Amino acid sequence: MTTESQAWPAMPVVAGVDHEFLEVAGGQMHVAAMGSGDPVLLLHGFGQTWWQWREIMPALAAQGYRAIAPDLRGEGWTRLPYRDIDRTRRTRDILELLDVLDLGEVRMVSQDMGAVSAFQLAMHYPERITSHVMIAVPPPQMRFDLGMMPGMRHLWHQEALSMPKLGPWLMRSGRMTRHFFSPIFMVQPLDQAVVDQYQAMMSHENSARAAVPLCRRMVLPELMRIIRGSYRAERFAMPSLFIFGTKDAGFPPAVVRRAFADTSIYGTDVRLEIIEDAGHFIVDEQPAAIMKAISEFFDSLRPDPRE
Image (tube, rainbow, N blue to C red; front, top):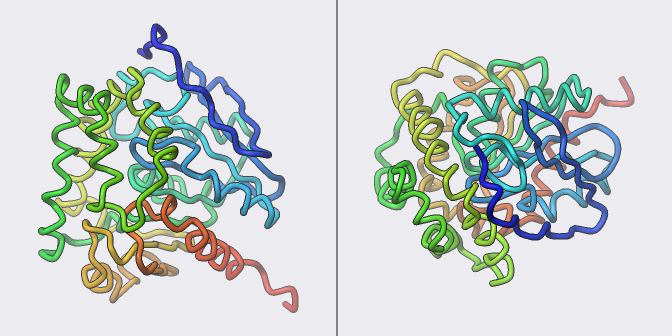
């Protein structure tokens, strides 16, 4: 269920972005979109919304793409029952959204928790995804590296948010906002107005309560599957780009480079981009660098007009 008794935060304005509430999976999914041309699906991270892509969407539109940024179940302005969240529920929502929009295939960009649904889509529905970019999340086939241990202490929130009383309190109180957008995860501090915008939605009752099933039924089960090696035999069938910041506490550059020493274990065309002086929330910290990486990746996949 969603909570209608609490007013929803005002929708932030990004010039040129259209908003729709589409009937998806028995409820209303909020979708922001901008531009025309080949569709690019943008999947936001935990505690964020379509607004995470506020600087990416105009840049994609300027390059001739249609940027499509839904609010995923349990977050943002989407009204879908958060109690229904499980390991693959969001992925099924997205597939239904693509059908509602009559989109047979899309390019895809994801960050943080949005990447869980992204790799499920890419692996299990490759006919719908022509290429994909995953930001600040490693391939699910990756083996655990001891170099990741120091950063694990900063991920206490995944367990804490899965607890029915503690999780919503952490979201409402602002503790999660302060944790996420702290020097632990970011090199460049965000403007207070940006932090306030994220906190307005994270503290909303729907988002606060949805954090429990998101962590308990989606993030933690998928993490265990990754640790057990459930995905190691699978390969990405489409060109794939992974982007990390050099200051991401969870995935230090040395760990990332070791993980990508042999990209054939992930797919036939898997690439790595490391962005200097960026933490985990690279899209907010360095949108221009992210857009440059995305643009160059997409451009490299265009057919050669001489052929």
